[in-house]
Image 1 (cartoon, rainbow, N blue to C red):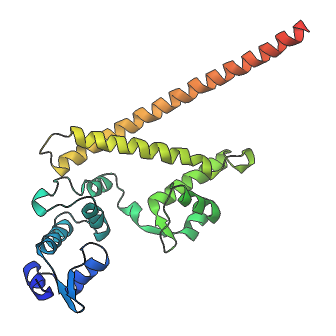
Image 2 (cartoon, helix red, strand yellow):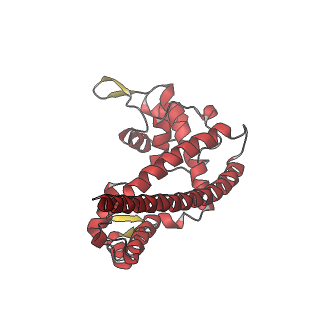
Length: 243
């Protein structure tokens, strides 16, 4: 079909369709001749899905592209829990935290230098946008690093931003496993609202479990470290006495 037919069939104007193509949301049409573009049913189905995701799931185009890149879906196959991440963000009061804040403001309010903030971005701890801004949620993370510095965990004792990379790796690994398990065990037919409530409770309680486990493990590691140190001193004393 020609562009005019595609417009009529989908209710979407040509400029929008061309934008979708430029952004990779739609495949390029066939071009039998230089100035001739031919679209097929798959273009119409894809546009219908984009509209459904926008108007029923309120997803931004960047997120829609991620969904479409994950596999060919038609409107009937659309998962009922699509958009759950946005419901979770709202439930945890994270919507406002997504509002951007300038890096200069972050540096000023937290006392953390721009070079350190850029290092945080490199290791995946925060994300700096192209315009030199970050979300308020990420600004809070920078602030926590500043508090750690003030508490004595700073460069004077060799504690640097790179130390936090292990937190990023551990969090990503845990999150990937948690989400996989959540969707695998979620009863069929569960609504997005009910799934959000269930996920909220699970996140809060499992974060508490994780914190307690980490504290217990740290205490155990400190005890074992001290035991090894005492054993080392005792060994030296025995060696010295035998000489």
